[in-house]
Amino acid sequence: MPKNVRPKGESASDTASTSIPAKVRTKIRKSIKKKYDGFRKVYPEVHGKVVDFITHSVEDGTLYFSVRFEDKTNFSLRYACDMFVVGADFCDFKTGDFEMIREYMRPIAR
Image (cartoon, rainbow, N blue to C red; front, side, top):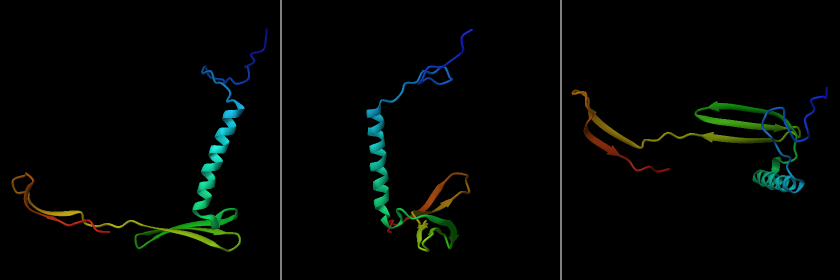
C-alpha cells in the first residue's frame, strides 16, 4: 500500500492551491515595505524605539493613549469627540402624530 503523500503546494482540504512565483512575492514584499515606510514617516520620532509600556484612559470626555519607551520618552495621542447641536424642534404628540410646532436650525460650526 502506498503512503498518502500530498504534493507540494497542496493543502489538506479539497481546494487546490498554487504557489506564488518569486517575482510576485518580491513585488508584494516591496509594496508592503513601501506602505510601512509611509507609516514610519508619520511619527518618525518613535521609529526604532523599544516600547516599555502602553497606557490609556478617559478623562472629561477625552481619550488619552500613551506609549512609554525604554529610553524614558513618551508618545501620546489625545482624542476628543465633540457633541454639538445639529438641529432642534418643538413638537406636539397629543394626537399620537409627530406634529411640528416649530423647528430651530443652527448652522454647524466647528
